[in-house]
Length: 204
Image 1 (cartoon, helix red, strand yellow):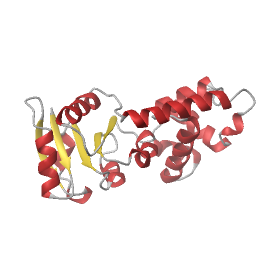
Image 2: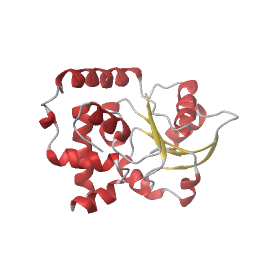
Image 3: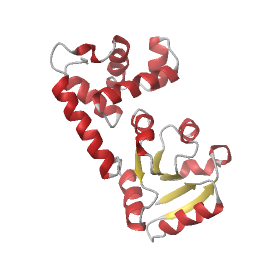
Image 4: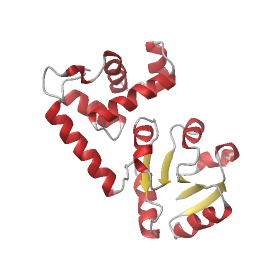
């Protein structure tokens, strides 16, 4: 498996390379930020980032990449990652072990979402609360625009086409999706659609 590392210093790059050392993983290169990413990075199976370094810029360059982010602030990243069009993504703590990081890399390469257990519990709690609160007749939990955006996501439209259809900016689409995910406790675009359908907030 080909992995490309994005970390701000040679020391952090070397640290990640040590953690990823495995017969099944081949580190193809390193970069310090989004601006220095070579075109060859697009050939990697997984991009590994340290502490969400310029993650928005990296997603703009590779919108359908597979990412693993090493950070101790997962709550800041969940809305952005869950509403992106990334093929798959994962979050692991800075104190990660070689086994944990390598397992996360292999999991996201298979299209899975990887989260620390604490983040997964928070999401589960939000989903449970949402299922209790969002009873029939409470569809105003989502604004009309949020429902429009969510329905278009359910139809398989990417953010760019949703923005064009609704005559709004891509940034506004991402804002609405982040709000939807927060309200529903969704961990991905697909999860948001599933929860919206189950709670009767949208129809497809």
